[in-house]
Figure 1 (cartoon, rainbow over the protein chains, first blue to last red):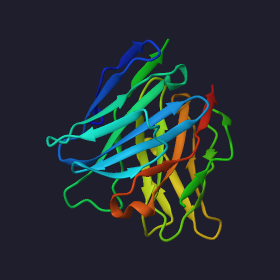
Figure 2: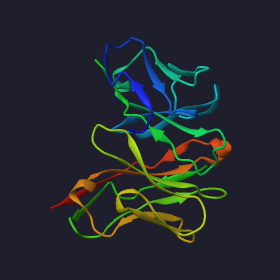
Figure 3: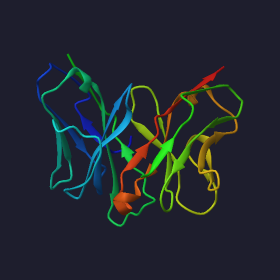
Figure 4: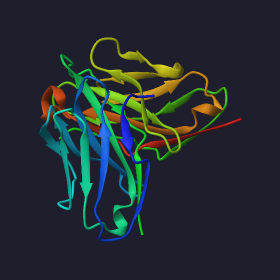
Length: 116
Length: 116
C-alpha cells in the first residue's frame, strides 16, 4: 500500500458529462501529481500542485482542471467528456517537508474512467 | 527538455535467465532517474533510483540498475528472472525545470514477459 488513496476506483459516464476524481496524498506529502494513462498515449503528466499552488502543467486539456485544498487532498475535474478521455487516471504524491530531489513519487491505484 | 526513451516495447525472457530492460535519458544538468513497475490493474510501484554516487543501484525485488553517464543509459537488470516479474516497467527522469520539486517524466514503458 503506497499510502495514496484515489476515489472512485471506477467511473462510467456519458459523453458531455463532468466528473471529479479525488486524491488523498501520503501523510506529510506536499506535492500531488496527476497522470493519465491510455493505451495509445502512454503515461502522460497532466498537472502538479505543491502545498496548494500549481507547480507544473503538462498535457492537460482546457476541459480539465485541478486543485489542491488546504488539507492537501486534490481533485481533478474533467468536463465535456469525450470518448477519448477514457483512461486510467493516476494521482501520485511526494515531497514531505525537507524532501529533496532524490525523493520518489508514490502512486495511487488509479481511477479507471470509461466514457460511453 | 528532459526525456527518457525505452527502445523496446516488449522483452521476453525465460525464467531463471538474466533480464535487462533498457532506458536512455536526455537531461540538462544532473540526472535524477527512477524505475517503476506496474502490475495489471495496479498503480506504479517504485523500484529504485539514481541520484548520485555508485553507478550500480540496488532496489526492490532483486532488481538493480546501472547508470552509465557516457552512454546516457540507466538499464534495469535482474540476474535471475521470475515469472512473477512479468509486468510493465517504466523509466522516469525528474524534470529539472521544476526545480527540486519537479514532476517525473516517464518513458512509454516496456512490457516484460517471463516464461516458465
